[in-house]
Amino acid sequence: MSAHLDVDALLDDRAVGVIVCCGSGGVGKTTTAAALALRAAERGRTVCVLTIDPARRLAQSMGLTELDNTPRPVPGIEGGSLSAMMLDMKRTFDEIVEAHAEPERAAAILENPFYQALSSSFAGTQEYMAMEKLGQLRQLGVWDLIIVDTPPSRSALDFLDAPKRLGSFLDGRLIRVLAAPARGAGRMSARVLSASLSLFTGAMSKILGAQVLRDVQLFVTSFDALFGGFRERAEQTYAQLQAPDTRFLVVAAPESDALREASYFVQRLEAERMPLAGLVLNRVQEVRLPQLTASTARAGAERLGDDDILVAELLRLHADRMEAAERQSQLTRSFTGAHPRVPITEVIALADDVHDLAGLDLVGQLMATPGTP
Image (cartoon, rainbow, N blue to C red; front, side, top):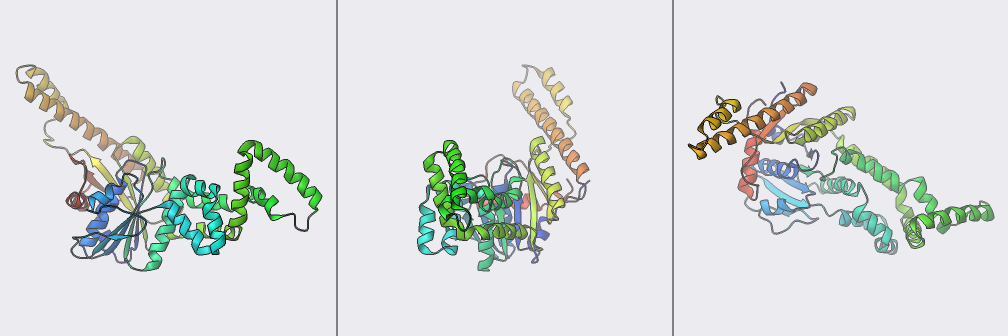
């Protein structure tokens, strides 16, 4: 049996400066991150929550008309303070270019079609830029706790792999070869190099198209001064995840796929020696009238038949919920059996979606409720 995750102790720990909420898509990471941020602020912390939620529910929940790439203060917070923002990955990528390139070169990069596609939709860019933005927020030194809602990736592991993957791509051999014609032959045999590159670029033109290849070559030529720094930046962003003041919270739902992803993520964090605080298990079926078993309720519904349809339907509903709770309990026991040292807190399934601060406050209370899963 796993220990209970003491959420309030985690939020009150001044040695913790970053909490990363991670897990597969659709398990409630955004709501969890927002509820943690609100609870921490109410307990006196100066908090910023960074979300990557395309549905923009976080802004509505916090009473803000919109969220963008700049932290905005959330009104009505007592105790500490709370700011919230939504990652704009392209704007964050643009900021990196503008900060590390001369104005003319930066303009050439920003206008390049290949860069525009890369900064908007390349696999891993969103995860990478989330870490970039985290680094920027930490450098400002305004908040003593930053809570990160990770992107809704197909796999939770994408978040850990993305910084290295994007850094390797931007600093890789293939993309440098693509730029070779624009850079010139240097001291090598111009005739031999030119012939080799003509064959290579001719083949690549057939694959990519001549215009795309030219866009790539112009992009790499303009971006050349920044290439060396991207692998280093990827290493720095990854090191941030291993920093002593960072904690990971794995978020899951009591479903087989979600808990399987959570198990993979826990194993990866342990292998990478990253600090895991525990597991938040969302949407747990609350058990009421535990003495009335599912089989007894179904039998009672059958006996009533049409004599009392309303009571019969209520008994069937209770049976469905008891069976769902038992399935969830079995899945949770399987997870805790594999990871007995991972603390867990459960959040019961709510009847309605969270859409305001009161709802977020309730989720925070449920996360912090003492008890053993």
